Length: 293
Image 1 (cartoon, rainbow, N blue to C red):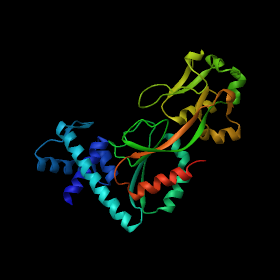
Image 2 (cartoon, rainbow, N blue to C red):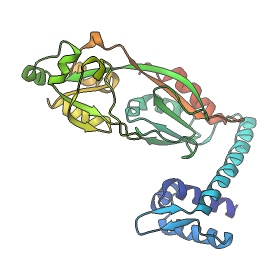
Image 3 (spheres, rainbow, N blue to C red):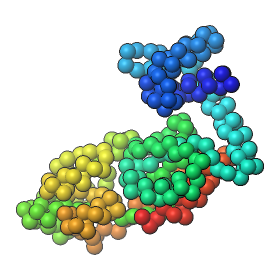
Image 4 (tube, rainbow, N blue to C red):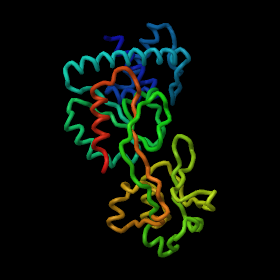
């Protein structure tokens, strides 16, 4: 069991690329993580990490060892899943990743937690394209069409993207009536964290004669909404993210007649022979309950 504990510490450090962050996840000090890694390296007779004052990186031997450790952990989780099925009570840690818009899912996740109190939720918020398998996630919710053949997917719902700005901004700059009118406005653009590409707006692109002038570029949602409410430009955001602002009138939508492409959300999880009870009940709950929000 001591060896399994050391493997868990190693995997956390390898995933987080930090002894400090690994210790925070495990509830131990960075020094304890470092000592456990040293003991493991001594027992194996190889160096697993290159260390510097700021970062740690896996050695080639560390990469090979991590791949083997992942398989060992997967087998242990499969064994745990089989035992849990015999007991009939979903439990254990469930590591999930949600996009930044996932803060609006909290009421539904709260209901899930109440329904399954023995499941420990470990929630990551990120708009980047996470590697579900390599980073050890049990399930993720993402928009767009799934592209990883190693993953299973189920559609959970959709919501519309809307173009919004403040009434004061449109009084000052004029209200666009056609998509091409956006060329004369300050646009608050979103950059995908994983690729660095700017997100397209659902009213056309360069091929339609629309060239968006960047008043601001960000890789998360909140600055777009804040700048739009402050009268600094037009943003393209999920409608549910600005529901309150639209109801209060601090933001208004434009070009609705030209906007017909919804955001489609899917839940993704690693394919495999054994689907643990905690993942199965989470997937079923999300598909059945997440939308409408």
